Length: 82
Image 1: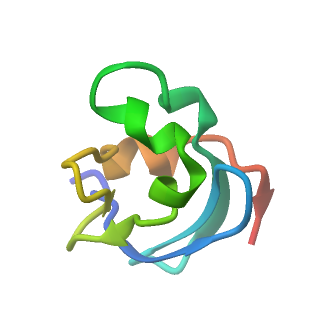
Image 2: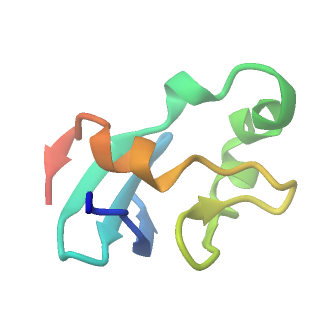
């Protein structure tokens, strides 16, 4: 069976960057700016709102219901490996 990533920790790193830690110990810093266009993601362009993300059990989410699939986050090229 393929690995199903689960986000266990997330920390704001400035701009639209978040360091993500997965349940297998892998950490990476990801730039979320490419996902902030339109629809439910539009409010996240406000950096104060962007910072309101939280780990909801398997990925990161925002109060308005926006989230990004943890598999997408796991496969995303990091800004840097943590």
